[in-house]
Amino acid sequence: MQPRTYHVITFGCQMNVHDSAWLGAALEARGFAPAELADAEVVVINTCSVREKPEQKVMSALGRVRQATGGDARVLVAVAGCVAQQLGAELFDRSPQVRLVAGSDGLTEAPGAIERLLKEPDARLALCAFTEAFPEKEAAPRRSAGPSAHVTIMQGCDNFCAYCIVPFTRGRQKSRATCAILEECRQRLAEGAVEITLLGQNVNAFGRDRTGDGTSFFRLLEQVVALPGLKRLRYVTPHPKDMGPEDVAAFGGLPTLCPRLHLPLQAGSDAVLRRMRRRYDSAGFLRLVEELRAARPDLALSTDLIVGFPGETEEDFQATLDMMEACGFMSSFSFCYSDRPGAAATRFPDKVPQEVQHERLQRLQALQDRLGQRWLDARVGGETTLLMEGKSPRQEAAPAQDEAGALHDEDWQGRDPYGVPVHVPLSAGVDHTGSLIPVTIVGAKRHSLVGRVVPASR
Figure 1 (cartoon, rainbow, N blue to C red):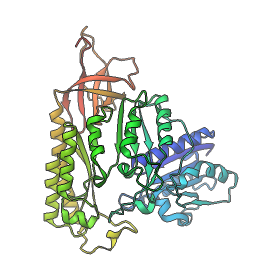
Figure 2: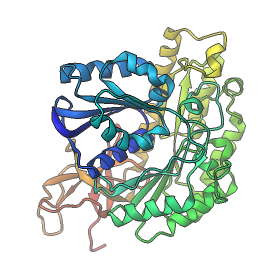
Figure 3: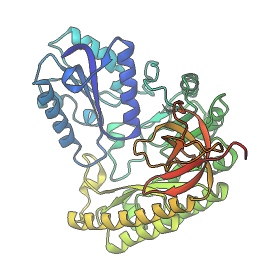
């Protein structure tokens, strides 16, 4: 164990990844340094309740920490996030090394709490109370100087979908103050970011809760795209029922807003959607897709899908497959249904057997593979602009020649406006990170594309 060192283990969504990055930056601002698990004085496990068996994953992580550290009582283990919110002080009984439990809103206080607990080795703290307003975190510089940054605009959810635990682990919806969002966006742009993704559980309901300051989601988008230095804007995740005409029109009226939208469908059957309490039907979802593509014809859609929700019949499942075809999703996150503590669906009868769930999931994912490959193949021959992230991890790009006949000898990865990784050969010995480079798409892989730089003479 090395003093003033930390290690973070992260499960779950982009918001958890973002929270972990903030926590690391806040600790480093206090003089801590990142370290390998076996060497860290402070270990944080940032947890997620959305996926299957979340408590098991936390206990497994605690076991790995105990093994790596030899159970050293001097190592301060903190459990944060949704499972921490769910289990609270019960986690102290799960592992003697756990001395801090920080729920979704309590994470804000975690850096100071960690410093206090290091000074008080016999103390334990549980920070699991929900705050009345958005829990504003202390400012901390980004740990990565990459070209893309994430900015949280709201937290929690008021929808109480029948399968979902978010309102219980993240709390009710709380919108962040517009001025704080814009200030953080300015800070990220000043640090070198040119692309920003706005985060929240239900972003297009921003401002509609009692903590909102009167700014709608569309007006927020307008203010963010006006910031000097911003080249690309994205957001996740919207709710289909809350996407109004202004939100749809934004894809045609705000050129900085990227033509990619993650729009959760969850199921294609109206009967299942009603039981899920999604508050839209398949016809309404299709109308929304048509309106979005009328506003931005090249818009690429991805989605979330749950297979085997209680009472789902083969006919219901086929309706989901039909909706996938009708919407032409370029990708999706799909999962078998599983009960979540406190969610209404835990009490629903007619649970679908696991073997049926898994067979349906395989069929759904096979269809998604075909849809995704069709979308990628259709990109070949077109031109796009890449925001370069770094050297290609898989060396997929084929060598190409510039006008002088010299070979490019380094493969780089960038993302196009649709968020797809594209591998392209670029000049060696130059740091291309953050550059916007025009390319022609010359090949399609399973989950990525291959490009070639458009000659400057054109």
